[in-house]
Image (tube, rainbow, N blue to C red; front, side, top):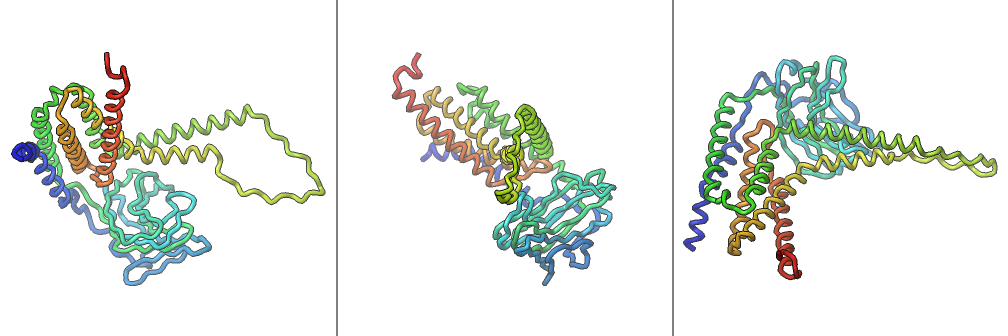
Length: 389
């Protein structure tokens, strides 16, 4: 019992700082108003473009798509929005039997879109809420950077699924800017966590572990992925998508060039013509869609792989050091704590926030690592000649 209390005391500074980090940044708003509210609880008359079945009652917009599949949408122009650098968009959405259309974005959505002087849509992050199926009221607030080339900014409420009802409420748009105090609080917490890392480097005796180099490299990879700006991640994923799409299409064109064309059979007047076939998605388009789905989930895959490898390396190092079985439980709890800490550090970035789902993926990766390690131990123990010099 005394030893257990000592172990808890050993980790108490990190647990306290973790709690302080989550509580402080959970309540602290790093943004402050940079100008007047641009849109607040709008009405239908404020919309400059309406389509489909759109009504408003008691401040709630209801967009309905019936069996004819005609999309519904309302657009609100944010006047003078291009005078600012950041726009905060907030709103709530509720869906009822919304069936997603051909593309994932054919659903119920609340958007902030930007257009250049020619009226062309400027690509980038623009979706605040996107739902399908039947979902209860969901609220979200997010900040969007205004593109330097933007000539106009619009808030869009839309239901572009095959069918269903979408309701929107409490829509608000306001220009904001970073608080002056944010940079100082950020520096303070960075220094606190840097000091904690130095403290636990000695307490956990990472400099004495058998596989310390591999373990530290794994830790640095996790921290790098945690603190990397989302803009970098998006640029890398978009660039990779473009490269792969070009490769797939060029490969498809090359195959078509070397494949002799199939001559159509001569027409037979006695046979009735077949009904025209419904055009289907090409094989290369299907490959591109599958790859884009993989890239979209690469963030979670990174969490899973990095924490799997970290846990496996730490267990292997403990085995090489002939640690007591209790050590495996203790070190597993330490890695769980590190996973929570690494998620909380995203509060110190400009455009990323921690999520429970990411932490759960870390736990799944650790569970896999534990299973692989136990399997490895069984193989070494029961298979003759394995693990023996």
